[in-house]
Length: 403
Image (cartoon, rainbow, N blue to C red; front, side, top):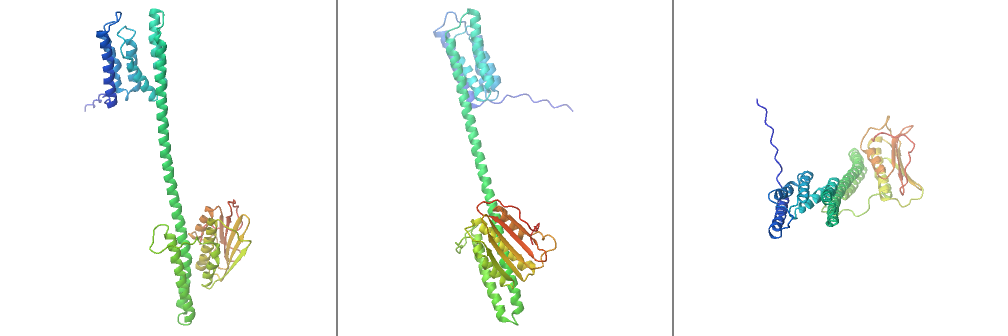
């Protein structure tokens, strides 16, 4: 089987700008040389035909591919234009090709190459004339000044382009960072809403479940107590609906007006205790220290901790008594819920309850310890900072999950 033939090299097509620029340079260079030769010939000038025109073509045609091969085309064009003048041809506008190519290579980032090429052309032309005549032309200073201005202008344009590119990159990075921050906040809000729904539903549905069982048990023997249990179920379910509307109102508009009251805080702990008492558990609320103004996040985290802890007392502990203790310190708020139930054997079974407490506490810089007590029962203890205080590890048995 014959080997495949290698594909022949095809130069890239010139861009439209390079094509028009090449045509303009050819028109100006060839036209200026032809006009000087025909209308104002200089006695010592050589006839540009054919080698003078050949050098003009060699200087102009590489401009067609200056975008694809800037260094190669610049070398060819500048060498051809440099060779044109010392040979004594009419002093036309061939040097414009050099100007375009020097500007191109420097603007495209080939700085060292462009500066060496521009200064090298000036040195080569004047060294050749000095070798022949022993003197420099007065125009030499003007030419070097023109070359320096051209190269500096290319540098300024290149710096400007780099600045604009860096500015666009910074703007894109800022936009991307802003979008990531928005996504992060949305995620945090969703997690927060999930915790709120869990806390609300778990606590109140647990109360409803216990009261419903009580009502079924007493409906024939003690209808009055059964009626009280049903009334408790009605009020608890109503409170649950109101709180759920407030939570879900963050995500969508509802027909009924959402509550306009602030998020629940420690001032509502007695209501939680009353709801738990209705299940037959004796709950005592104890406050130590002078209550002060708490940050909203700390107040909400403390309330949710008590709510979840009492929910676990109702659902899992089998306790007859529970103590809710709130201690107001100078730098920290201590919230503790203790029951006399059966507790757990070893660490609590992992779940969402105490995990959610710890996550809430961590958001405000606090900690939560949870675990069985010596002698029976279970304890949940949260240590939450006030005014940005840094929490320290607390003593006590710390579980690895929640019940």
